[in-house]
Amino acid sequence: FFKQKTAYEIHERLVGSEMCIRDRNNIEEIASYIVSDGKGILAADESNPTCGKRFDTIGVENIESNRRDYREMLFRASGLKQNIGGVILFDETLRQDAKDGTPLIDIMNAAGALPGIKVDKGLVPISEGSDEVITQGLDGLNDRLKEYAAIGAKFTKWRAVIKIGNDMPTDQCIDGNADALAEYAKLAQNNGLVPIVEPEILMDGGHTIEQSFNASSRALASLFKSLKSKGVNLKGVLLKPSMVTPGSEATLKASIEDVASMTLKSLKENVPAEVPGITFLSGGQTEVEATQHLDAMNKMGGFSWKLSFSYGRALQAGALKAWSGDAGNIFIAQDILSHRAKMNNLAAQGEWSIDQEEEF
Image 1: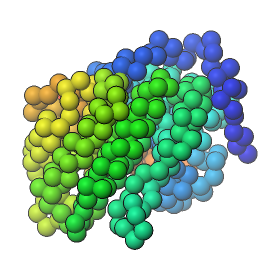
Image 2 (image 1 turned 90 degrees about the horizontal axis):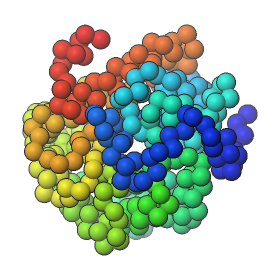
Image 3 (image 1 turned 90 degrees about the vertical axis):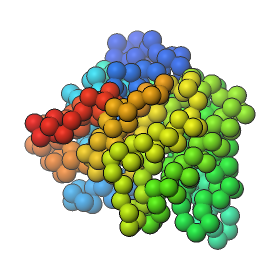
Image 4 (image 1 turned 180 degrees about the vertical axis):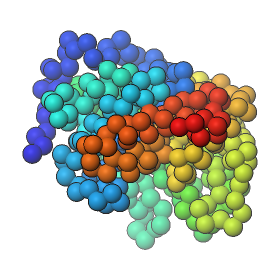
């Protein structure tokens, strides 16, 4: 059964390894590399319970060896090379070895995909009885960051959640989460790690695209005010926002062009030019929808940052279904993941078309 390794044990094995990417130790260089040449991020940081929910859909038992086999299948896909600049991991995965004993982070590094780590500790109500939440995990964070850096992580992620509804989001929720994101980001940079700041506007509900735009703009304005007040180096930060979309239960839907233009408007009004990259979450979109929206924004242009992706389900869904826990399906699943990674690389450069999907 899985034996957790200490930071020292893993660091010792990494030292001297040709597979370890050792020349990208400056946070500005790391941040820029992750989003260079159309690269984006594979979000594989599902907690063990969340991974279990995914496995339930394919009839696979949620045990450590199955989680390892699934993640190893993803990380060995040929499409990580040239298309994926970083992989966000859960704590367990950062410490795991592949079936043949190779550390999983060595496999990622060999593909040019830097290992990152989710460091927040989940959500709690912002006050008793409130429907709004704030992210916890600042207690003991500095020590965890030191350990993750010693293991070999190059970047980190912290997720805040903003809900739209009756009298929501409140300033208390937006500003409280912005302050926590900024405090986390500063600690990460102090430990030589690039912070990904993720203010997610949930799609849940019947809100309009205009309400989503308002919530997004308020969250981004507060976030960058807090980041600047904490002295965070914006050249060594990546932003992971939601796209501006109507709620999942909204009566009025939005076109690809509407989502792209309103998302860009919110970003242009609130995100400083020195931020090197914006890596969107897919937030309930289908695999192709997430690619279409990203491509549309890059075709519109008119911004200084790299607009890329940090997708979980929008990269993994097809591969997960194809794999279904059967080792005989690994190559098929890897081809599906590689295709999605390539499609999103093209979208991050404004060079995608629906014809390329049909060719696969």
